[in-house]
Amino acid sequence: MPPLLHPALPLLLGATLTFRALRRALCRLPLPAHVSADPLRTWRWHNLLVSFAHSIVSGIWALLCVWQTPEMLLEIETAWSLSGYLLVCFSAGYFIHDTVDIVVSYQARASWEYLVHHVMAMGAFFSGIFWSSFVGGGVLTLLVEVSNIFLTIRMMMKINNAQDHLLYRVNKYVNLVMYFLFRLAPQAYLTHFFLRYAGQRTLGTFLLGILLMLDIMILIYFSRLLRSDFCPERVPSQQLKNKFLTE
Image 1 (tube, rainbow, N blue to C red):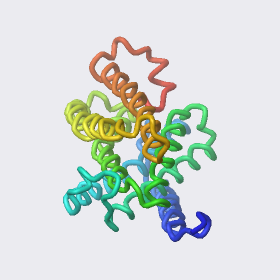
Image 2 (cartoon, rainbow, N blue to C red):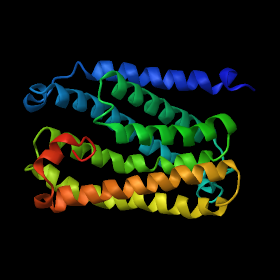
Image 3 (cartoon, rainbow, N blue to C red):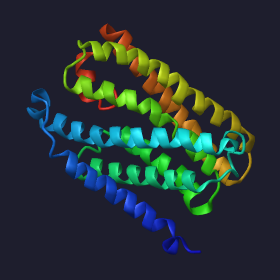
Image 4 (cartoon, one colour):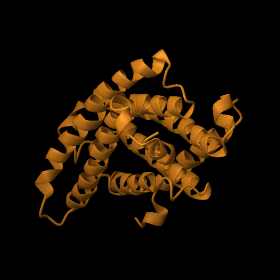
């Protein structure tokens, strides 16, 4: 079936519009005083609120998918479930929404790393959506959203200059543990699995290329996280101000 007529397109469109509507609703919420005083922080705050909602839903959903269909842990290419398929469509819709939001808000230059990440993520998810392959891999990839819950809390507290709060100090350690469990560990497992496709001319090889680039990005983000939260004296204040992903 030609891609333009694929039945997944209404799902992608519906998910994208859902996140757009969610953003408009969240923009009506009151802002912290420190955030409302700065237009850039205001945009980041609203953007992160949507990301936070996506992380909560997708993270829990991914855990349920693995619990309901445990063969996804082993049969990464062929394991399939309706719930897992809908989850991949749902998250692809979020990445489409966030990409558009960054571009139309003129934040592409400051957030170019997010754009690169989103394009690679959408490329990987579309393999599961349009070819019904590696849906299990997409679900395992989305386990990272459990880690993103705590990472987003950290980023929002930094935007609000709340690093001295007890919640921030507790969350930075929880965030570190979750980073290992739900970001580094699944990524290492998936990389080990996809290395079998090295040298082949298959969809798996394409996904391996995406995965290796994401590995590099994740390790860079991890080094930034460690320097910012545990070695802050080594991070120039101007860098913290200008880097969206560092904040």
